[in-house]
Image 1 (cartoon, rainbow, N blue to C red):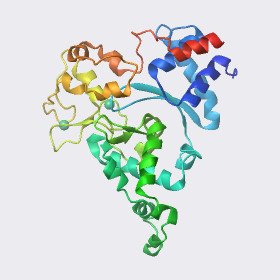
Image 2 (cartoon, protein in one colour):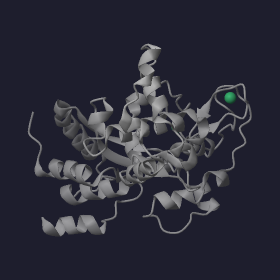
Image 3 (cartoon, helix red, strand yellow):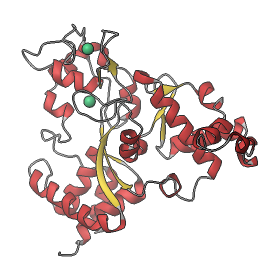
Image 4 (cartoon, rainbow, N blue to C red):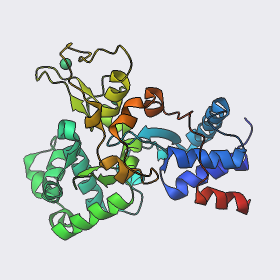
Length: 307
Ligand SMILES: [Zn+2]
Ligand SMILES: [Zn+2]
């Protein structure tokens, strides 16, 4: 197998050093290092990712794309496929912090369609319960052996941990100030979602964290807003649940909230409802925004001038 070139290395380095990158940023780096537009050279782009992944697989890493479920934007990142939390969160977080992160993820996912919990809810999570849950197969007598670090994990430590996890994109703050999953978690937790039987979206089959539920309360179909937008904005699309055929009232206007602007700062101005309606559904939904050539960001042009 031919070794990776400096071009591949630059892409990997950018993702490792700057964390998950929005699609436009990642593709503009690709554009700079290959001097080819990923929109016009989709095959080359895919080939690059395939080759990078063939090498990363040796160290159980993977370059992957995911969607931020709160706004549907696509991110690229490198994830560690070794499945213990310690290696995922690295050495940066302490054991109680990691336990607190896990407990918040569980609460956020349990919450169902909302995909978020309030800060108060988060801070009130008891790590003692976390230990009990983890060792539920063991005898009751052991339940008293809650590590002191867990017992003494204070509210302010929890608050500080939330801030740090948000900064590192493991968590996010939603537009209404709640705690949700960060892009890094969406990238990283794919197998955890599966093994914890988190329901998946009827259309894209990815974990249904932030979703719309079927209006029929007896039906458990869940669909991401951006998947609904893509399906229902197609001409002739029946606006019914794909599971139970109940009418699914869906107004495109409802899909777009200010939160999108918060999380995608590179977009200027608020999109109007009309723009949403006239969006090419393929552009919004696929991981390939082939219609818009990648812009050179200031960062990537610096990168260019440095090379
Ligand atoms: Zn979906
Ligand atoms: Zn249904």
